[in-house]
Amino acid sequence: MYYRRKLTTIILITLALVAMFLFAACERPLNDPALFVSGSNDDLGCAELTHNGKTYRPFGVILDRAMRDTKLGFRDGDSELPIYSVKGYDSTEWIIEADNTFMGGSDWLYKEISVHRTPEELESFREYSFDVPGGYTLDDAKRDHCVVFEDSRVTSGQSEWDNFVSRTEEKKPCYVRLAFYYTLDDQNISPEHYEEIKDDYPALYIQDLKFNGSHYQLMSSEDGKHYSDVYSYMKKYTEGPLTSDAKYSEWTRYVPVNDDSVTWGDIFRGMISSQSGASIDHKTVYSDIK
Image 1 (spheres, rainbow, N blue to C red):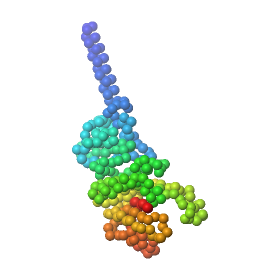
Image 2 (cartoon, helix red, strand yellow):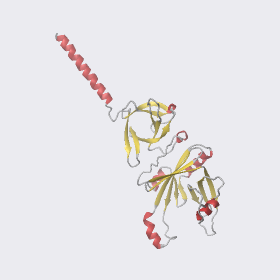
Image 3 (cartoon, rainbow, N blue to C red):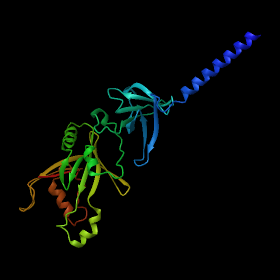
Image 4 (cartoon, rainbow, N blue to C red):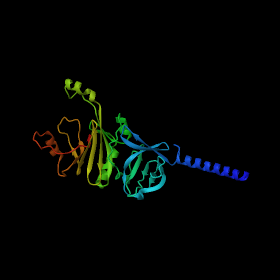
């Protein structure tokens, strides 16, 4: 009887230890290498995943499950929400949150927030998200590899623009972020008007330009509203000075339009015409004066 009670006690202790182990395994600590913690960024209005000091944000949707590589862990420890590395890419920069639902949904591609250059293969998965944080500055734009224009002159990111144009010519999906910075010149306006608008300068405007292989999409945000315009072509115009006393010798513009035959003269005449319907739908996305 004594030995039977002792054996029972040993079995109960063993079961208790096993239960404690299983509970600890299920309740993953925050430093668990397999744990990706979900959260949100209220300033940007987007979800986030954090892991080992890295923060990832949604980049786009992947329909091809063959892009999944090594299973890295799980979202919030949920075995139904596995996280994979992306085949051929560093998991400290790109990860996949898999959708293993019965009917098979779409996987989400995430990008680590310090990554500013997108590989060509992954660019086609980009979904539009105008994620410009509050207080974004000119220095931020230069650091983030935007194409920066200061008062109609390119001051940073020319190589980014050249790469974008090269990809569009090859009909490859690509994306570039544009930053337009304007200062106020009190020499060309009345003192009254200067006083009225001086507090609005300097001004920084951000636009995203995306090419999907056939069309251009220009995206921007102003006063809390998002705008998106789609064009079939992007024309390059290089013009000499309009007047003999102009302070430049050449003005280069890239302009998305829906008519491949339109000239800059056509666009300019439409802008200054008082006739209804004379204006030509266009957007200037690149402007450089020399």
